Structure formats: C-alpha cells, structure tokens
Length: 371
Image (cartoon, rainbow, N blue to C red; front, top):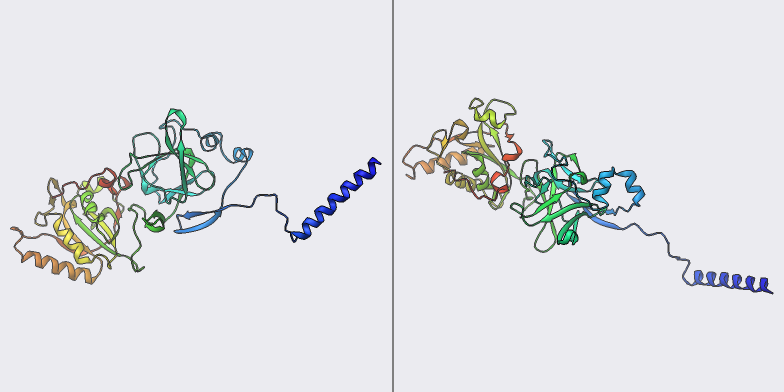
C-alpha cells in the first residue's frame, strides 16, 4: 500500500508541475542570475558604454591577481606609504583598475601629495568609481571602489588641490598604466547630466566647442609661462592650455636647455579656444595686459631671451590682428618706452615637463606676479 501512495504523490506532483507550466506559458524563471549591466565611461573614446558588472569567486580572483593585489583590492588592505611604484609616466595615457581594466584616472590629474601614495584630484568619470563610508580603524573615511568589479582602490579626502579640492589617495597595486594618445574625462554638470571634456596630454581638461566646430589655436610668450598659462586658463572660451618651448632651433629641449639661453626658444603657452565664446582679439587684449611689452628679453626679475615678449601667429588672420593690435597700443601713449614684442609665425611647439603644466593651479595659486 505504501508503494501505491508514493506513486500517487509523485504523479500528483508531476501533474501540478505540468499545470503550472501551461498556466505560465512555459516561462519558467531561470535560476541563474542574469548579467547586470552598468554605464561605464570609456576614457579613450569619450563614450559611455553599457557593460556587464564583473563578478568572480574568491578562487577566481586569486588566480587572476597576485597575492598583494588580492589583499589590497579584495580584502580592503592598504599598502605601506612609498612602498608602491606609481610614478607619473612620460607617455600619454591613463590608469586602469587592475581587476577589470576599467578606466580610472588620467595621468594629468596625478599630483604629488607628499603622503607616499599615488594621489589624483579627480577620476575620469564619476560613473567609473563609487564611494561608501568606511568606519574602520575607529574613524570615518570615504572609501573609493571600482564601480565595475568593486575592487578596493583607496580613499578620498577633501584636502586636495584646485580645481576639485579632492585627493583620491589610491593604492598603486590597484592600478595599471596604459598608453593612449588621447584621454577624455567626464564631469557632472549641475543638472547631474554628464558632459565630456577632451584632455590632451599635458593640458587641463578642455571643453568641446559650443557649436561642435574644431577649436582654434593661439600661442603667446610673455615671461614665465606659469603665470601666463594661469591668466589664459581661467578665461571663458579657453578649452585647454599647455606650457612649453617654441621659436628656437633645438629639437625636444628640456627646461635646463632653455634656461641655458642657447636654444633660441621662448617659454610660451599654447592655447586652444572656442572662437564663438572668445575672440582672438580678446586673447590679444589679455596678452598685452598681463606683461610689460617694453622690456627686451625680460619680465620682472626673469632675465633672458627665453622670457621675451612674442606673439606666434597661426594664420594670416592672426598675423593681421596682432599687427593691428600692436599698432593701436603704440599710438595709445600707454607706455613710455617702445614696444619690443615680436610677431612671428608659429613653429613647432615642444611641451614642457609635466611638473610645469598648470604649475600654479596645482599649488592653489592664482598668479606668480609676472609683471
């Protein structure tokens, strides 16, 4: 009798299962979890892509990572200060997550914080990192994680340099460097939408032109390039700036070469600007205002041909505008002495060393009193 009862129960269960399948149209729930997709910003294309989150077992992470990488990124460890190797490379590129290759930080946003850990003032996009409160060690800190694979990266603090005031203090073993000729960053606007900004190597994050047209270029020399760059960088319509050397004969000069006074190069600033927001004539007005164009090969205490006053024009229109602007100033009686500013064609521009780029901005200074 027991066998009949067992058979009856099994048969009843089978009938119930078939009935359920018929009523639901055969749409049985897949017990395996579906891949979750999230938006991630691709810093090399400037586009937001929908990508799958990365989920791995501990065993899989241990096979993929070194012991130290696993300890830091999966167990939320911290490497000793100065122990990691994360020097600013001379190549163009960015830092990615060691676990899933998500783009995290551009080389140009790295700065020397004096803490012994790699420090950055912003990620390539807020989509690519996430933060949460860390109440360990008897204090409250803000932990930074990779948004795609949840790798522990480090912590973020509010004692960084302008323009963000943030210091992303990151473990070097959580990062890997990849070369890239062009890097994009993305920052949130006030309406919480995102805008994409071009970040050429050696320059600050730029902005796309308002009308989508290619940016125009201007190059000026007006003494120490630290202060000259800062004066132009803050202008509305200026998309990007970089300091460097131009007008001389030596290829790929260094700062020491130029200071020796034998290269013929001037310390200069190359500017990309949106002509729909700021005109070349307005840039010329700033150029004349921020230095003394009557002192030959000198600005304030800085003496030498590398500190000469020069306008490097990129086309005939810029040449005509520069000549007319200089003529107006000469007849204005503003200066007692003669204007010695040169107006010459732009030649090859050699970017200065990374520590010179946005020198004053990184240190929270507005100017270096170049006049």
